[in-house]
Image (tube, rainbow, N blue to C red; front, side):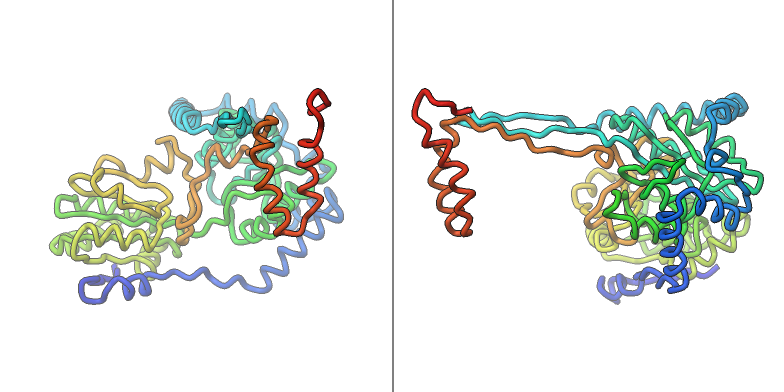
Length: 440
């Protein structure tokens, strides 16, 4: 097992950041052309294109648009067939996710100024949202819960699931069962860029949505970026990543287990330890070697650690957090004696996990916050998926006559500077009405 060991005390923070840089892989022009062709095809030919593309990419030959629809009986049957342990796990996770997002729900509000003018904000849910759930070799019921439940809590009335079918048209039952638990209102057996096109543009069978959320492969991510503006999207997510800040009290076995939990996702995944405890580094190396030897996805994790992993020595924990902020990771673990003391210094991270009893895996499945998080340094300016992503804000302004009169001179000065006389006159015409006139 090979993983880089970097000494930030000698190299400096800039050099370490440069060595850990994981530039987004250049997208093959052929992939870009393919996605653009798919989007155009679905936009122009609707269901006919969806049926053809589903047959080509997923080997499912639907005879009509209706056969792409997942019926209510399929959702019901999947829920009934759940193993008791899986049913209990989904219910446990769903309750926690709902409780967390209910606490975060934005509220409408009003303030009244000194002139009696009222200002405020109205919160309204989106009407219709599309949730993309990857398919293929694995099932992702946790992603169904983490995307659909925040939408339901926000008040979205129509939550549309799309996911690639198997060759026989089937969809993994645990995904359908999770959809029923989460509150999905309709579903379709269609995936890839063609599913994104259907959600964005609409077809006879699939009505367009207001926003598309959920992860996917490069075709899905590129399609989402292309349709942004026609509809909203959550983010364009990249490979998973974790940064662990640890002191000399941290258990090397726990660190190794958490690094591998990310590394096994994808050969592009990034797993990094930042520590001021020099003796911890060789202990973590040995633990990684032992655990990697028995990991089912060893080849994936090994490549990720070799290409994008690192064990980094720093002068102190403050320097470790500063370096973590520069990396702006998807997941940040604080495996130190007093993690709460470092939290105020954290400025950029998708999710922060405090203390030894909080492995990142609880955030993946059951803690409550969504596991759809900003990656590739975008935590510098973006946030985890949440109820805020499924609502809109409208400003509310109700001026009183004294309030308009108080603004009169300021309006006149600003509209004159900008050369917009009509704007200024729209206020003047109201203020020039004689007392007793209609001032509504």
